[in-house]
Length: 515
Image (tube, rainbow, N blue to C red; front, top):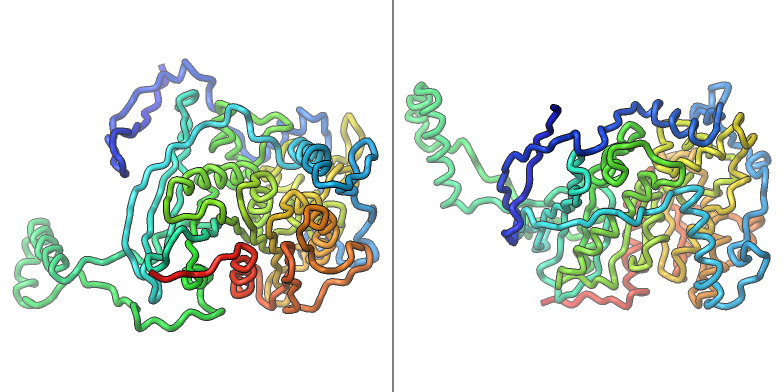
């Protein structure tokens, strides 16, 4: 009989403690884990959908014969976008009530079915435990930093473990509650506190004794250098650190403005590859089996994890839960936009360089294409149904991005009227043309109709996405709840933080108050 050994946690403690007791799980009681390569998983989905062949995505290398299109004259095969303010039956939406009750649910249903998938009704609960609480200093700013783990309930299928990794950092010199920006990324305690000199001396004594016990020759060496301390404190900038400026790390800019931040690790929720779709939270819900066509993809799973993290933040008294935002760049920019669109509890968003699957129009054929996501190793970001729009041979014929019932301007519209900042860099510095900045700008222009309907201000221009021209680099449009700025850096949103923070603070009516 095949058995798996799993570790369980003692739940009787307030903070992180592990009573590591091996528990034998009889795998015969559960469906066996399916192990696919990414190619096998994609082939399985194609078979479910009746797809015989997918079109290949274009090459990002302009020297290749199949290079991506960068000719604006060829970029818009279907230039008319679905009208965000017209229902499926052709009724014009003219009031906020019609938006909330009629049109918005239609748009959500289309995105869930055709692009991102739906969070399953049996999505598991998450229990959060604090692993570490540390009083630290970041630059000149005292903070309380916490490493927090979210244990996803796997009682229905204990062959898969999902533990969500997150770090929360809050300023200790500001009266709370404070705004918090949740960021998709790689969590780490920013500046772990070090032992004081007395404790460091005890550590060195113990370390020397351990070394001598392990290797008696160490005793003679330590005697020759009696003042030598093998373990020393790292230098700390403290109050000698330079003042925070627009060139400082975004996290320091947030703290200096009286904000907190939270970093969430997407891969701890769902692996960023197609082979992982039978693992992670998607695999856990499916009990280790392959997805169905309308099951959620990684972007929606990461967004679900962010929503669960927001549930935890609601338990933190120093966090203003009504002023929690979401941020991400590139694939995490896509995830941040999906998070913002589907969970209205997030108060604002910073969407960085998100490309296809994010703010860039699906219908556009410029750089990254629908096929780039559906046919390549990035198909796992989306629901299985998304593959239909790259099909060249199938039981339903051939489809393209023009056949999608929704597009990215409507994903942005789902964020209305909450403050939403779209950020890009420039190709010359590494924010490649592949991302189609123009296509994102067109989507932002088109989304403005919904912001205005709901009483918010858009970019302050017309909503003529055919003719409005993208403003020059560094000429941000930051006067409304919908904002756009293209900085002169690369594939990052860091240069825009010095503009994003005051923009968001103003709209949130937040002012830093020192203790």
